[in-house]
Amino acid sequence: MKIQLLSAAVLAGLVFSCTDNQTPEMAVSEKAPELKKSMRSLRVTGDQTVAVYMAEYITIDAATGNTVFFNDRGNKQLSADFVPLDPRRGGRANITYLVDDEFTSDNGLTAAELEQAIDNGMNTWDAEGCSNLGITKVPYSGNSGFVSSSLGFGGDITLDADIQHSGFLPRAFFDALAPGGGDFILGVTFTLLWQDGAGNFTDIDNNGKLDVAFREIYYNDKFSWNTDGNSYDLETIALHESGHALSQAHFGKAFRSGGNGKLHFSPRAVMNAAYSGVQRDLKSTDHSGHCSNWSSWPNN
Image (cartoon, rainbow, N blue to C red; front, side):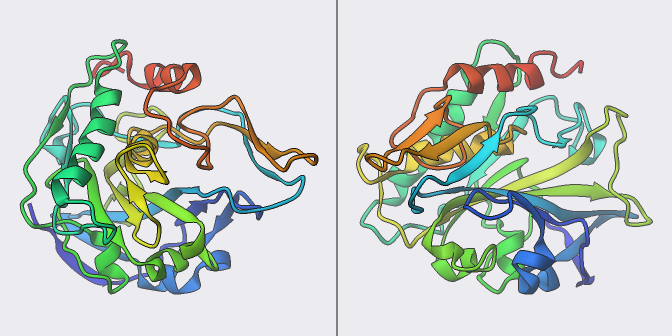
């Protein structure tokens, strides 16, 4: 289903969760004023609109010294979530996803290889036995990419799926997220929320979490992506970003030792906020975060 654009609007609620050696949470006006100016609300039907609320991104191991890169040790869930049987999402009990196969990496990988890596990441979450979530892939209709469209990088606007893997974009797109972001951001997940007629984010099930309309995932085409476990492993990043799309936050502490400069993680997990090599299997903290959020679905 395509949705109609409203006029451009500044979204004061847009927040970015960053993982470099700067402040972990900051308003987009402090980090990326041009991005904030470009964001728009979308009218879906009647007085229902959706708007970008936040984004989570994973970085490369790029800094040096005894720097604490991040320390996310609180609740493993994000502050926004999908509503079970939400009539605005068609009343579905399952979570749907699509892969935009029009955006491909320029690293020699075929569209089929890229799509399979993303499917593998989604299937890993779907295989978790603690929930009856039922992650379902839907065909790509040719529409995807609200955020990329807003920033002039092409794309279309759709509600075809709850989770939209909207393709590979050039480094300039990621520079809009943080100064020099194109040099260290591997992937990013945007959360778009439902708004009421007054422009307020909604919580129709009164669970204390804002209601997610859909999420978009983008990958940085600057980096050398692979599907064979070398360089930057696409399945690993797809698994991580899909975790955000399923409402998991970053978790764990990363630091570099002063002796050999090696990056350490405590605990090492898929949902760490920095890349530490191939991780295609969920760790215990990933599992517990997923299960705590989805084990009662759709009755939570």
